[in-house]
Image (cartoon, rainbow, N blue to C red; front, side):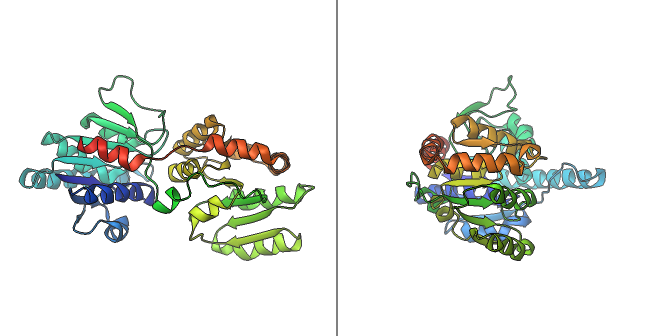
Length: 348
């Protein structure tokens, strides 16, 4: 079967798409992956051997001025026309889209040629691009059991599949807690200034500082945080990038971080308690954090309530009661069979 996989924009879209592409290729299907220029190299490097990689012209539409929005829509329209012509000549048997504006044109072209089309939503609140393209797909696959923003009058079939994660994360699924009062602080690839400001201040307010902190931050903040922890005799490893995130999560008893879909699902796959602070301009992250909190695995804390006083009290309570961290980790643990479920759904 010839299967077209559409992805682009960020690693959060690309990594799940590549995981599914690898599995479908291993099952003997011919894979073509379309993406935009921002992540083309990432897709080429991770695509299964023998698959094709196609560039589409696309960029985000929201919030950058009227001229930018007009240009973004023009790019999507041109790509839609080009792909409609291409699909008419070499028609794929399935189209699978993993969100982002680079997915809009392939989904539209598939709709014109009545090709069975599947859409995956990575967040617990449906994104703008996916909400727009839902009118052209037969199945919406979701990372979370409940997703905000899905129209109630839609005829699209909604299937909870989970979100594919990297193999190294799967290898740590259900790993036991280290029980060493290990705290991981991570704000994503660019760090998060609020975490750099609040977490060290909160730790200084704790009476019992016998914890070990792994703190990922922006490169320009590394030296300052290293000195702050060292001057106050707090054991810490401050770094700007974590190469082995699976190991960092598995070797921690508690995580403080943002709540992008990949981060939340990685915590659920390994099974770790967390304090999640959603980016305050991103409703998707707020929905992801709320979904995690409903499991009982941790706290979803708006930025304005994420204060040193609150955090110091919460960290003290958690690290003084390891059994509570154990219970939270067990509640957070969600079996991840997303790649198999998605591939079965596409090919059945």
